Image 1 (tube, one colour):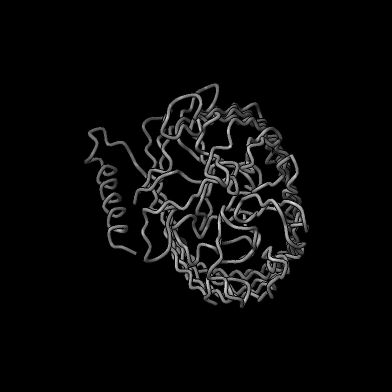
Image 2: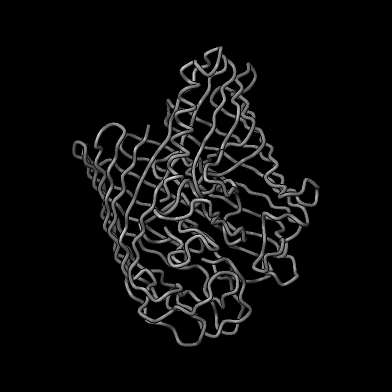
Length: 489
């Protein structure tokens, strides 16, 4: 990691501390700081999921639908960092100003990298909702907004993050280790009606470098949440409408061309209930509308995608907690309707499955980033047990997953990991994604410092043997060992 990428954030922290002391402002406006700094090192064996030489494989939108990971190495060493600083200024009793400063792409990068690289390829194989600011500076103002507290409502104006439900689609990125957040640039107003909270929202998501109507992406939404702490009950409904101009640069297909005009609606239902020892959370997002030329075939497609996510917890004793997670995330069957749902990249189910963009291991920063990976096209189940003893927390998890849509011989299909359309499959793809075993621990070194370690084994399914040549590769199982150190303040 270049020294200048550490020095600039540290200089900024010192400058803001000077202001916060009252020396920088004659009025002595109080400023507080929160944030996170983290480092992780991971050894990943068989990261390409096969022994075959795949060094000549073309990945990304120019590929032929293969599941191969480009390269010829067998082991990867992922050494990454994370940095975010969240200053807050209390102007008066009615107004606060909040911001987030971070470096690189995805709040950090890999040790020894060039932090100015922007890894977002901006094809629709990514996420329907923005998950990071589009910048290429070493130090970025990722969020900057006002909270205005009025008698009728609480207003938020500026560039800010959003959260809804279990965080499957809208995710604030406030958890330790989160690299992304759902980005919203506009305003929202939250009206409190007893235990009901009504929040209308508007945003101009993107204009590219052109302020015309033809380039814009606008979002209009309203959410209703019932939150009753006395009954440990939450449920709500989110309704959002997103429209894009015919030449918007935010959503592009595999030909690096705009998908064109689109009009899409998101409905997201959320339910969460706590009992004495048991809790249940459910989120069901559904997207419907017209998406434009997402296949790059000069033909507009409709869009209909959905996901069902459930999380159950049982507190068996003071030390033991059992968990069962399950979900269905739709994939695309390559019909006239685009059907792939992509969850937020902060939403994880395992240490290996859907966790990393493995094509970035030998192509880091070229067209994509190591952390550009989102859950899609899967039915999964996860059984877990957690043991807590003093400052130690141990987690034991088993994850099973299968693909909902696969390539069928002689038919067109969608490559979900890289996000592009393929006209013809030369063989039929298996749907087995594999079974993963995870063991991890968290040690609370002190109230602000956390040490995490894990061991993960993935029995790779035959889904990843597909290379669209008619003769599949032999898969090889993955083994990963990692350590993470996070400082929250």
